[in-house]
Image (cartoon, rainbow, N blue to C red):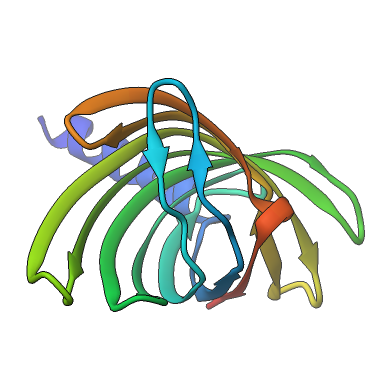
Length: 175
């Protein structure tokens, strides 16, 4: 048993030698219009969001993290969400990198005009890119989402492209 604990401790130490905690977050801004398809109708609104983020980079290719977001929507709708994700960076150059996030988001929002509260979720993949500013910090953005989203009482396949009607820029700093 003692040998197993020493082996486990050595393995954990070896895995974490190159790992580091990072902090960051993003600011988001959207100008969008109503979206209607045969299966759903979503009234999109202009919004501003703030989302602090914390994560753990195992190496330069794999990161686990989560962000907590508060969003102010035009029309007295406000939301709060928690979104854990696993990020895989599949291409990294000196001044540019490409990644894909596997994420799950739980969101609760309230409409203050009618006093109602709703919960929703989405799960899927979100590709994006990052731009290192220094070896310890940089900028990130997700450019699309492909996955499932709960809309009303049904779960629908929901592809979206973020850069068409919204802009979200994230910042990270490795501690």
